[in-house]
Amino acid sequence: MNDSPAIAIPNLLYTYAMRFDDGDFDGAAALFDKGSVLASGHRITGREGILAMWRTWVKMYDGKPLTRHITTNPIIALADDGHTATCQSQWTVIQAAPGYPLQIVATGRYRDRFGHDAGGWHFVEREYLQTDLVGDSSAHTLQSLT
Image (cartoon, rainbow, N blue to C red; front, top):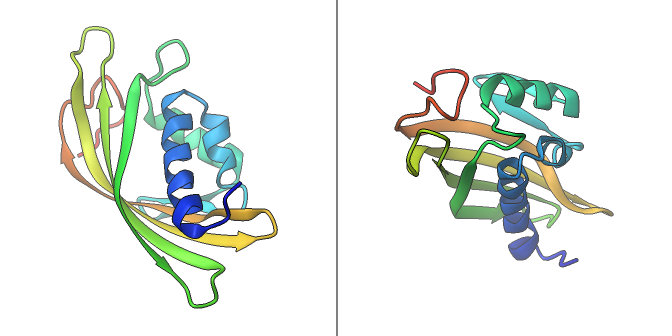
């Protein structure tokens, strides 16, 4: 395992996207076992709370959301202590679901805080900062993105 923040932090971003898109919500939520998620001004801490939030947001098709979360433009700032960092990144969700063509569902931004301990780098907080652009999200979300 590479403990360099230049490798480990982007890998956390991409692992979240991969697990989410695979329908492994439990595995994605486990990334926040030492942290929390901020959504619409609400802090959700604990795996069960995070799972419950995603289950009220995301449509599933045989256990998968049929999406690809593409995370780009990570701007990582490492603190002087070398044990904390922040990152702002952009996300694009694409989806192809039954009856819907391959399309961009929405784009937006994350603001993340990371910590480093004996176990390596981990999420301290992920803030769903904003949704910038919204396409047809009706096959992806159970609630409106606008």
